[in-house]
Amino acid sequence: IAKMATKEIVFKAPPLTDELVKAIKLITPDIELRADEESREFWELDQNASCWAEFEALSPILKRIPKPAKVLEIGPGLGRSIVFLTKKLDWDDTEYHLFEGNGKETKYTMLGPRFEDSFCGNLALLKEVLGFNGVTNFKIFDAEKLDFKINKLPDVYDLIYSFYAIGFHWSLEHFLDDILGLMHDRALALFTVGYKFAEFEKLRRLHYRLIDSARTPSQTVKMLALSKSDIFTANS
Image (cartoon, rainbow, N blue to C red):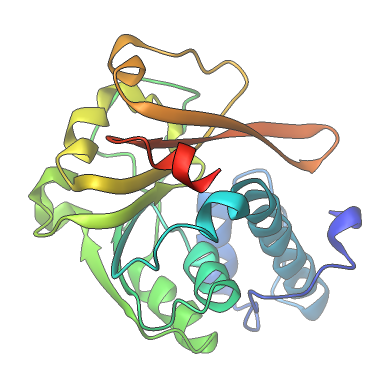
């Protein structure tokens, strides 16, 4: 996080309450916070560090694609990514759909199998944090009300992304057909994947790029960008 200290703070953390600390702990079990200003500043820096690492890896693609009219984020947590992308790319008139569920316990795996009850979000606090950051261009879809199935979402999207969720905790291979069903031919999908990620047959039939990303020298992952058509050659 130290190397990110000089970066612009784009995502603003609200004052931490006991409820918000509990929600953060559920999403990020390895983080220890209290409802005080020191913890607020730490969490704010931590969230921006993740966003900057993703943005620096993906910006050559994101800055060259047409401005998306409709975006889907799967597993937004407490909203850092929508805040960051909206502000850094001037996507304030882009319509975001956020697919998230209320959770009571953390059920993380690493590149694990698909199971539906894997959400550990807090929908009310997600809305509050986005409001604190002045972001209003979103609609939250409660995963439980859609039987935890993304293929029940009502739209097709220009951009779909899932950072540290599908592709990282749960193998993309198990979700890919559903995700492709929500993409038009020129849509883009983005995922965080670990270094143990292995390409699979369905992925090889698509157009994709694997891009190195790092928050710190010891925290390295890859970003996977994929599309049904070769949008990367034109945008490289």
